[in-house]
Image 1 (cartoon, rainbow, N blue to C red):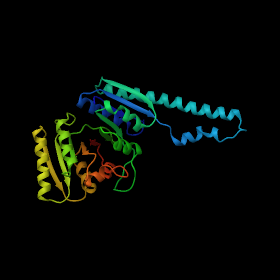
Image 2: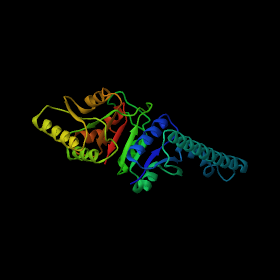
Image 3: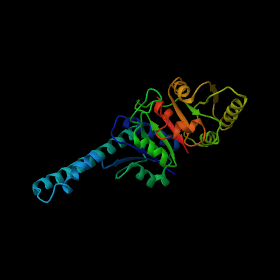
Amino acid sequence: MNKVYACIDGLATTAAVIDWAAWSARRLDVPLEFLHVLERHPERAAIADYSGAIGLGAQESLLQELSALDEARSKLAQAAGRQLLAAARDRAAAAGLFRLDARLRHGELVDNLLELEPDARLFVLGEHYHAREPSKIHLDHHVERVIRSVKRAVLVATGEPFEEPKRFVIAFDGSPTARKTIEMVACSPLLVGLPVLVAMAGSNTTLARQQLEEARQALTVAGFNAEVELAPGEPERVLPALVKAQGAALLVMGAYGHSRIRQLIIGSTTTTLLRLSQVPVLILR
């Protein structure tokens, strides 16, 4: 686990993904590698695969034209991918990173990430859709599939321009998964030196206060300036606004559990909280 992999696609979040990946690689003191995957899109396959349905009497020139069109698209996609990777490397180098690499690959994004996973410390990718309220809107399927599939930490960047975080917020519910998240944060150099707010949404009970205090103490022992907050209400209503109020911040949470937070992280669609968050989200394993 000695690289940050940044998954770039040339869409609106690409610049933010590059900048967050560069920031992460610098903090972790590991190399950064950019990855651009050329996938076969169904709508393009429909054109390229006409040859099997044209029939025995089809004109040879038409078959050749379809084949040439498919080949031209492939060449253009590869050329554009190489330019995208070169631009990403230049941007990261301008930010002061020198241990840089890039690779252009074919196939499905998730399959490629699973292949690279043994050498990964962190995956960084961007969201492509954003919800204004807890509706049934889906995030880009890549985000959901990556979070479900890989066993490494994933940082999901929003489309907003990169701003170096001044603090971070841990979504906490007292579960074993949440306590594991506290332990992972305490042991990682990624967030060292940043103030942290451990936030819990729910009823103000003695148990909740005790769990928050235990989390605060664990982070304090690890050298963090830690505060806690217990906010009444449902997590999907309370936490996004709380995190937004922190200014330049990063939201941190665990990926699996058996509580309300689990429903926000992995469900039939990407998590409600991930969809609603206006700041980047770091999902820990």
